[in-house]
Every structure is written in structure tokens, then in C-alpha cells.
Image (cartoon, rainbow over all chains, first blue to last red; front, side, top):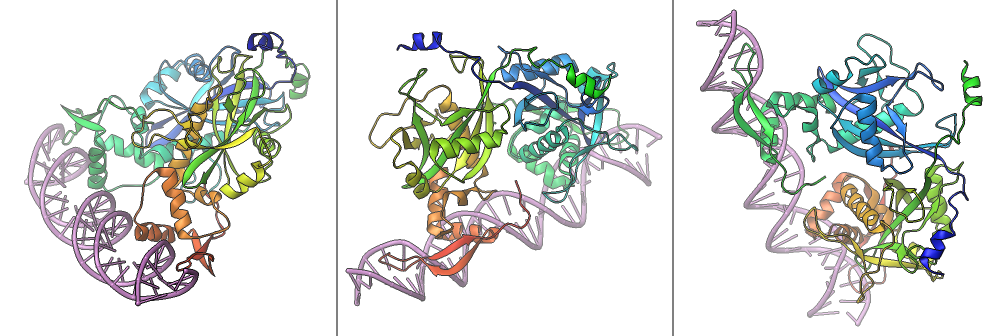
Length: 245
Length: 245
DNA sequence: GCAAAAGTGTTAATGCTACACCCATGT
DNA sequence: ACATGGGTGTAGCATTAACACTTTTGC
């Protein structure tokens, strides 16, 4: 039997198949706090609770393409740092049917995210309460200032937890932090982003040297304006030659 | 409309669904070389080429459960270190139909793997040629000693590459290396595993200190036997209190 | 001139690497 | 006794963290 004959006789309907979706964890750092984009569910199940933006994957659609479509359609955002995070597939994670979801992880500067979301009443940028110290603290919760934590739909709290863990893990050996900053930024802003994500503080000189020694950034001659004290120099991410993860 | 009513009216057949599979990258270190378990395909497509062991995910089956089933069924192995690796879903990765595969990553000591596989003619433990130096070397290839690289089916070469990258990345901040060793082992054996995986060499004293300082291992009073020189002390992994990663 | 934050130099501590040496076993 | 690889101590080097100090702007 040739391969062509084999393919012609193949029956794709022979097995029951699960539904496949992508869910998007879009993180940012605003006001010194890590925050995520959440969407209030309009339908059952978990109606009224808060969920990650997501969508089913089209039958001819790539996984990354589906994630980008969610970014564009559900959040109105054209481009952002995006990478696959983890796949969640517990048989009971959705009461409707078996849905396996491939979680994606996206980063955007706070101002761009706020602008994209400002006229969408179902979307919210929610600060995250992350248990700092131990590896095995409580779960990540999403809470607006001064309010109770928002109820999260499905297993989305767990997905959020994975995303934060990934962000923290990659922070100091990859350039992802710069996806949370505008094209030009001060070293103080970069340090604030690091401190917000890791929940630590660094000595200013030490942090400064570490960043410069990595060779990832270069000073533009320009300086920020508007402050009532010495203006800081603006840095930019140097273009990458041999891309690494 | 209540949630119960909503669920009753839900039509799970409304969208075309892809097939979902798991593929298993089972790695070991044998004779100082990193090696993977591969299975020669008996059917089209890619008949005769070599593939990772895999299976479709049952409609009521968890993802980790499916991976463990592959481990038990296709390789005859009861327990091994296992973690999810990455999900591959390019629309054209399988010529039969849309198949999204969740790749898993497993580790086993060489002797246990060899014992489980010895009477299976379709399985082979194949040493891996891994491009060491740069981040962006060529692809990983599987090659038996003195032969041409084996042809790998589907996108399985890419999956193998991801697995090796994951193993290397986690080697020095997690305990996964010990999944490649028997319960008791010498420090030299541990060093050999590290060197085989990373493709580097370490100074013996330096490596020794690093490992002991991590607090992961403890000496048993016992010593290996059979060598014609001073017998090395056998160490064991100390039981974990607060599990990480 | 004063306050506030940027930016830099020096020093101290830490961890890692390299080398040299000693130990135990079988032949 | 010797060869072989296990095991340990010491010294040198590098990197990193901490501190004190100087610089620049607006009020």
C-alpha cells in the first residue's frame, strides 16, 4: 500500500476529539505592580466571574496564530511579546465538554495596554497579589485596590500562577523585561519593573552595573524631562544580532 | 437562564475539532552520551522512519495520564520522571489531518531503560548528536554509532531539540539529573551525567563542592565495589521537604 | 542654596576555579 | 611497591554586593 492510498483510506472521524482553545495571560507592570488583563464572562459557565481572554483554535489555524488573533480581537492589540506557556487539559476543567487549552503568555507596556482597553467595559487590568517568599505560597489572586479578590473562572488562577512563575524565571537571563517598557526608558524605570516582578529591592549601583554589563542596552544621548530634579538618561534596547530565547 | 439550562442546550458538535495526541521524549545518558528512545514507524505516513512514542489522548483522559500510558504501553516502563514540554500544532505537521500534540519529557537511568526495551524490536535507544556551542546550532540528530543519522518522522527532530534544551536549562537549578541515575551513585557518575548533557568538562573538586553545597545529596557510608582502585563513596538524593519546580 | 534623584568610584565580601597533595584499593 | 582514580586542602581570581560621594536640575 502506498502512502497516497493509505491517506485516502484514513478516517479522521474514528475517534472522539476534544475541543482545543488558547487562553492568553497578558501581563503588564503598572504603578509598580504586576497586573493582568481579565475579561468578565457574559455567559455560563462561570457567568460574571473573571477569565483570561481566549478562543477556540480554528481547524486550519496555527496555535500562535490563534493566540495572536485573541490578542487582536479580544484586546484590540496588534503586536506584543508572545510565547507559549503551558497546556492545561484536565478532563473536568470545563463543565461543558472536554476542552484542552494552550495558554499563552504576553507582555505589553502599561500605557499601551491601558489605551487599548480604555473603551472596553468587559475588560479590566487587575493588579495581582503574588505570594513572594516561598516557592509554595498560596495561589495568585487578582484584586483591584481596596477590594476583595476577583473570582476567577475555570482553572485560570492556576494558569496565572504559571505565567508569573515563567516571567520571574526568565527575567534575568532573557530580554523579556523590555517588552514591558517603552522603546526608550530610564534605568530607574527598568529597575522598578524588575522589583515589581520579583518583589525584591536592589541596590541602585549594583542593578545599574548588572544591566549595563549584560550589553543589552545602550544610552541614547537624550534625557527625560518634566522632573523637578536631575533628568535621567534614556536608554534603549540594542538590536539583537543572534536571537536567543 | 440558569447555568444548568445553559449546559443542557450546549452543542459540542458545533465546531470542527482537531485530534490531540501526546508524544514522549524519553531521554537517558548511556556510555557518556545523551540518548533518546525512538520507535520505527510500521505504518504510513513516514513509514520506516523513526518517531517519538505517542498516542492520541482519550476523550476522558488527562494529559499527564496519557503520557504515563504511553510510557507504560509503548515502552513498558512503570515510573519515570515526567513533565510536560511544549505543544506543537502547526496545521500541516501531520499529512493525515490536524493533529495537535502535547510533547512530554521523561528521564530514566540507562540500565532501566535498556531492560525495558531489550525485547522490543521496534524500539531503539539512539545516541543524540547535539550541536554544543552556540545557541543557534543545527538541529539535533539521532545516530547510532558509526552510522548515518536516522530519519525522523513529522516534526520530531524539533521536539527532540526542545527536550534537550529543557534538560540543559534545568540541569543546575533542579534535581532532574538524579532521575538519570540509580538510587545510589558516585559523584563521578553524577559528574559524567552533567558533562554528557552539557557537553562540557568540570574540574573534579569544583564539581564536587558545588553538588555538596547545594545540599541535595548526602553520603551513605557505603562504597562501590568491583573497581581495581580506591572505591568511591555512594551518595543518595536527600528526601525533599518543600518540593520546588 | 536646598532638596531630590541621577550617576560614579572605591572597597569589602563572596563564590568559584585551579592546582597540588594525600588516600585507599587491586594487581 | 605501583598504578589508578577517589577525596581534600589551599591559594588565586573573578564577579558581585554595599557604601560613600559627586552631579544636575527645579524651586
